[in-house]
Length: 211
Image 1 (cartoon, one colour):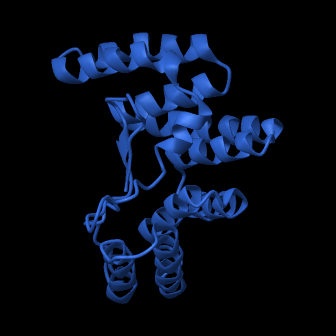
Image 2: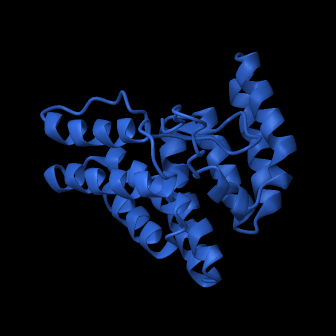
């Protein structure tokens, strides 16, 4: 699943289905069956529920199979099962620090009116993301950190971070332009836009966008 914020050119691909994890063939099989399920005819919401049962089987076999957990998270958000989605995000964050998943969790908490918890999530995960960025600068991670700052009410810090750090990509004109484009779009981002980026698009006819 690609976490693509509606207008962002620096969005992260964080749950590719082609990701291969050693010795987890059975779990991957259930995950792939969940994907294929959406190609079938039937009520979209029912297919997502059935897909989640397959993903639960994948997770039961391999609790650390983050791809399956992320696919389940996307389905729960689509189904508007926000409490379960928060729990799903927590399970992912227990296994893998991720500013993207933290932002999704923050958006879910905001939807529930739990603004104090939103700040707690951001303060923790932004700090870890910055440490990761310092070790290995990445334009994708940079944009996601800036987005987290912005949604956490630290708008100037978000913009200044992009302005300062884009200089590290001076030799990569395309990446620098993407960062600049993201900076222009950043003020338009909201928690609702974050959640909308996770929603599965209902397939037309027999075609599916469950990727």
